[in-house]
Length: 461
View 1 (cartoon, rainbow, N blue to C red):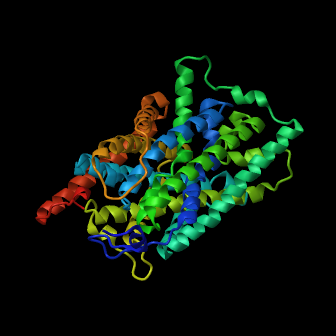
View 2 (spheres, rainbow, N blue to C red):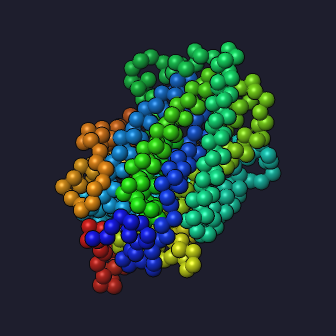
View 3 (cartoon, helix red, strand yellow):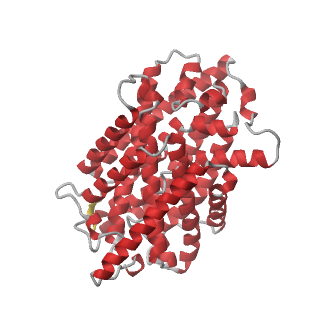
């Protein structure tokens, strides 16, 4: 049996063009998870959450934090049992052994990452960028933005992860500035504490519940990212021992920061002003009574949303790679760039799709689509972890208490349901993406049948 240290050196994936390089250690992975979760969500969608719930916008972030912990625990158990790059698709196939369902889950995960990257691109070209110039069309800025990130991904995982570290530190500094401004306001007696308990919906019945659920579902977009990290399992040193600490620390750190930033935002800025801005934290800086240059904060915010898009494109390309080597996507998706050991075909493919998505919506719609798709996937993953308890593996790994995946599945389904009061365009966009996935499945199956080939499943590996 291969030891953990031997596994940590390299992993040769059957059917692939070569192994991925294990370049990510424990500290890098923690920063990677934090950087993946932080970014577009808090920097760009805080205002949209305020528009749904009102001044009590800290509440949706608190609930979202709890939901994220429930599902994160399931991912930690599964990545410990199966430290491979395919993530949710791998877990779905092992649990249910239905290739069609596996493909749909994989496709939804990929689309969620690309919708998230597209939301980040839109945020990059919004109010933060307008602090510097309005001479370049926003859509063109977003497209050039994605192309630049694709080039960095092609350069190599080590370069991409190191860039993530730098960008994570920058975006953390931006949020520290917001918290510092909030502390100054509290000690100076500024701000409106009464806003913290104001709800946009009147009354205490169904309208209030759906308002909070809708804001939570949108705010949950800010927490997505921890699930992406499992797709780096084949590029992480000793993933079985490294992932539990990295994911839980990452979710805890970001959850705490989000709730505090939401409190500061509501304290200093009316929720209607926040809702009308694609750069809500810039409004907080301007209203904070501290002489901090808005342009400097806008630059920090641009780095933050860059980090979100970088990681999402990176993760989507690694998902392509993992699925190709599991026989779910065409083998060409597993092709690795010689010398750089990066999944070249996967990077090009997801970048093209991200560019297409940029033209289909604005920040709120793309963010809510991302959250909706992932909530559906999270429900499946939480069920899968329970089903896979019957599958024993030779090595020791983290095991989550049974109550957590049960609660995780229920909360994910509630937030994905119409109770969350999301716009119809989100369901339409998701339905179109699902239809595209089904069409791709049918075409791929027909091609395999014409060649006389059968599609291997992850359960066989």
